[in-house]
Image (cartoon, rainbow, N blue to C red; front, side, top):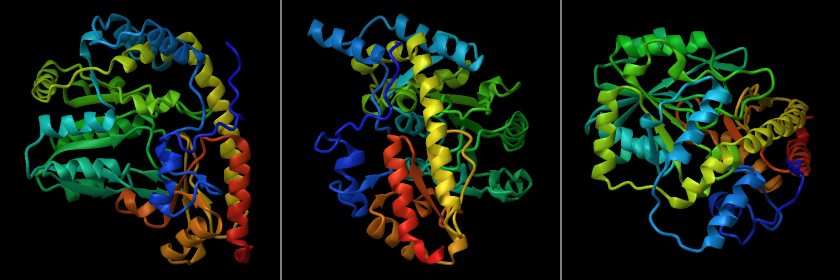
Length: 392
């Protein structure tokens, strides 16, 4: 494999990139001199295996309905086995138009209007939109902060349950906090779900983006989970392929699988042919080498960013165990969130995700995307230190 050049500055402006071309609308930061560190896609090209597969498909030049997904399914199973020690039956895999779509299909298939969905907040903001648009409510269970990291307080959550709750949407690794959950925490989650008869939809889209020294455990490997578990994963975050909108929903329980299949049929969900070509190319030995190189690079970005934030009094970066999304606590500054946002957006000219959009407990935080060439991370640190120079 040719070593990937993650330092390359790729021009993404005026390419229909949401991250770059929509950031001024989103945050008021101009792409002319701003740094986009908000939406979770990377400023890196995927492995050559992916672009080679696309080139071959384009050269063939006929783009009809996709058929025979054996290679696609086998690649998913191979990846889960070799990278996560998880044996997946290819007959248990559904292809959805991404995992937000997969979440919406789960809400439709496994709950009814008026039911409540449990989420441990703060959590990925798109889930709120999907759940509430479907006429369901959200039961927000705020996580505890213990030694600067999020932990799950199931005793407190037991007291919040009303009987209306039917499902948990769970982030593993956690977005935005970057936690990689331990086996004991996952066992606690399962026990909580069993006590309250809750289905678990486990969003594991960041499961390959694990920092050195950490180990992701698929929830499917916890004994007893299968009968109430829907697993969701994808190549999209791992390989920066979000625009292809192809995700995997993996269900081993036959009754749950039948219900989900009925919803897929009712909504006429059919596969994206481009995604079906790209996934096997990504889930490959070359893709595995690329991910290993990526995580070494992202770990370097993380260290530079965390050290830079630690140099600003009142700022604290949550230890990043997984994902490429830094979650920075500004509560120590004593500033109102509007002043924090003004300094980041107007003075530093950095577009970030506002913590308040992630639900209860998110307000003091801002989320920064570190998956960009290192020179931009260094510049972002310098801009932040200048914007908050009066604190130093």
